[in-house]
Amino acid sequence: MTVLIRANEAEVLAASGVTLLADVTETEGHLTSHRSVFQAGKEGAPPHLHREAAELFFVLKGSLRVLLGEELVTLEQGDFLLVPPNTPHAFEAAGDEPAEVLFVLTQAKPRFGYYRLLEGAYRGDTDWAEVAKTSDLYDNHYIESPTWQGRLMD
Image: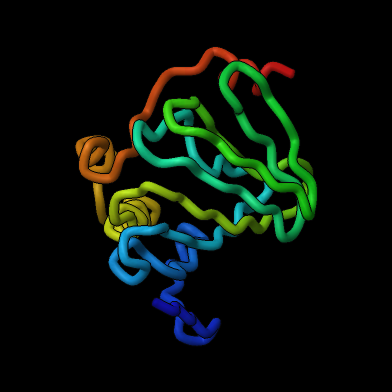
């Protein structure tokens, strides 16, 4: 199985800054991948975990603040991070510049439906409560994190 997604053929979700690359349906269940651009000062993803999937982060541009368990780390351009299943994480652009990140999830459920649902929420067409109801379907389980909340006080 070979998967080739040309940049001009990838689906772009403009409101959320997500470019869909390949989902598990195209990769015979091996992985799902997308690229995201996070604007400075906007949260990329609130605290959550994946019970089944491991998530790879590769920072293409800028820097990314990441909750990793109970720790806050900053990833810079060229940094790689692998978040294992059941590890709380969240992320946002760090600093005054946008951050561009390549994500790959392995052992993942199909996720493109989740990103399309998020796009509707960002545009105001979908209620965020609808997104929350899909946690088992997309293996995206939102959690509370005092560490992540505390970053706003620093």
